[in-house]
Length: 484
Image 1 (cartoon, rainbow, N blue to C red):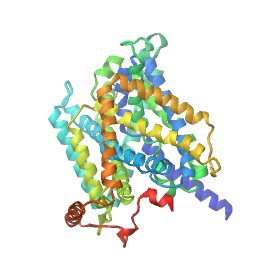
Image 2 (image 1 turned 180 degrees about the vertical axis):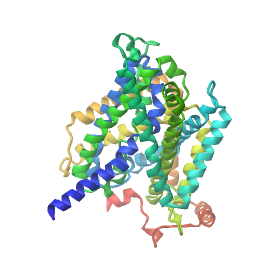
Image 3 (image 1 turned 90 degrees about the vertical axis):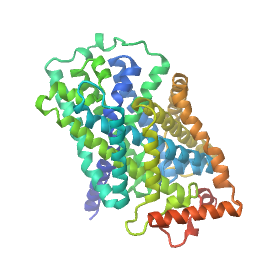
Image 4 (image 1 turned 90 degrees about the horizontal axis):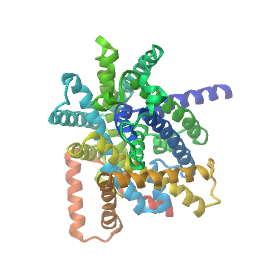
């Protein structure tokens, strides 16, 4: 019986690992970021170094998150940890930036990639029209929002089915690329040419190259959003990190090597859809497989981020940091329709501003800012509660090394792109007055409370939603719970 139970636990771990963690890290970013990484790194060789080091940085961050995940065993990831350690204001700012910036911008980038890959075969010699890409992206986001509003099961099945698309595309690219290299097509990868700089990179440009790569690696902290659902997190969190991060780093590096086996650096920079150009050069009559595979991948990516972002929005509302309407679910389908509609609306707004690579810098800067604050919280928590039981305790060099890299990266990124990165920082700080007015100010005038109640009631009638609890008074801010 013990052996059978152990076998089932191992099987459950790998099922969970493959479906949730590994598939969430390997996303559509690998079809988007190579162009931006090469552009900022300045050479083929240096761009490959960025991809490898990017995976190493993710491993350091993942180990820190593993300690936080078992020390503060609450689902919600960064938001829950920062709220527990630093209090409601910092947690709210993290939530505010995630709801307004990180998730909608990521959704916008993936949706634009979807439309570019779908439309590129129809415009082989030029970029797809701006209006066409935006309309198709908007249609895709709205359709998947409707699917997730209609049924949780439909959204989950779409995620499972369309995960196959990205795996098929990556396997095809790597296999074909390795065949090319075996046949002697590796001129761009030879050391004497790989480090010939297209342009001289500054430290700021190198920092932006890491931001571009980090977009492809985003998702490494996914398990911390569902820590309470992980069986034996003390064993399985580190195990998932040790398996997934090196494997993802290897896959991403091999994919980039495969790209350079058939394309010159300039061809890759000129391409609007790198995988499509790769397929046209090497797959001949089967080149149609590549845009379809990437389109399937990005379609599933949009669906996954819609589900996750609406879940975070829903959790924030339950803790009293967002309007309670966003914590309500449909009476019959049990889907968080108000939260999904907020995520969809924010994404459509962001679709109308900026191009793909600027949006990646924008969201990656805020992502790294959130990661750094969370890992700084680990060090503060060690000082604040030194005797607290920590089933996983990483060496202090791990968080310190991450924070040194984090400070250098964000500092030079802000110096190189002050408008793009600074805008995200400003939007995050706008959450400070919102927090004190909306969350801390308890004794609001009666007319404000009445207006909020009327809007909530109207939203309930339009969306046919109710609180998931029988008693709405059970909803308490996280800070209040932690004080009890």
